[in-house]
Image (cartoon, rainbow, N blue to C red):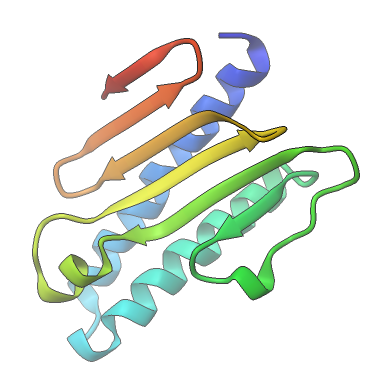
Length: 135
């Protein structure tokens, strides 16, 4: 991988882990009736804020807030696609299968993909030209 891809890969890994830990905290402290909103919101807000700080010229597209997308700077061509709580139904019903999903699209090409399962502490990653890995 080149330097920029390495940094993007590491950022996606860190963000997925951070958001996953937030989801675990919400899951253990929030009443069931408020679980979906609290989990989605905590993870979404964290991911969007961190991406804004780390990659201010990139666009973020989140399943949770299409109306609140940030617009990329002219010519950036980079879009972070996030699902802050992938597997919402499982999360709500206590089934142990949910994750945080993050992908990076650059000039229309998928470059990075990360899926983190915080319950199993399994991190699935893929980088264009470098294959896919588990942990």
